[in-house]
Image 1 (cartoon, helix red, strand yellow):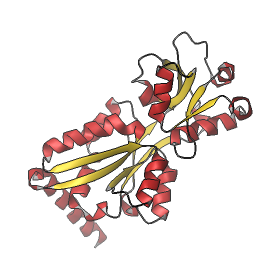
Image 2 (cartoon, rainbow, N blue to C red):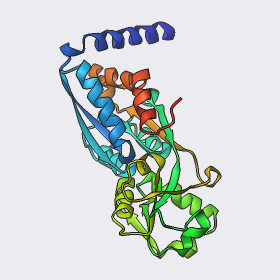
Image 3 (spheres, one colour):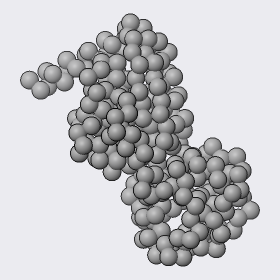
Length: 249
């Protein structure tokens, strides 16, 4: 019976995608800041196939977005930059638990001016100001702090850290020269204009950067949301993610 239900569900979704122009709905997406460009492109491609569906995108730190959803903000699909915030909403019974997928993976890097002599984590202590996403709500900051703690550098750096509201703000601070460097994702660094990747943070120092995505409970009741969620897992969507530097399965 479960197998039949799964097949039936897939068939319905395929039919919905093929007759996209007949659908009419507004969908609300809450998206981790580092996914901004990739998800925007994927949403635009989907909208061309289903012009009746309008995708409203809300970008920000994964934790901030999760709190917004908890407080009643409209959201049909949630994209996080770590598993913790997805688990948080799952425990609050705000996500359709059966829909949670791993969308993509990323890497943590450190960016700074091209002339910088920083070549590794130990060199960061020589810098004056370092941008990092607030670990309480920004996964990139949480990953960076985990790496600093494991490397035994927190005490030397805590007074030099400049907290940012999300990872894109970290990149902006570095690109403008307002800090000496910043911890960002590899995909963000590809968009920098005035800074470059000085080193990749060793993977052994922090958990792998994982992007879960899920339908919310309200989104799970919308066939249009299910259609877009299925499209997120398509070869076309994965190609977009890969083109923006994300690792996909």
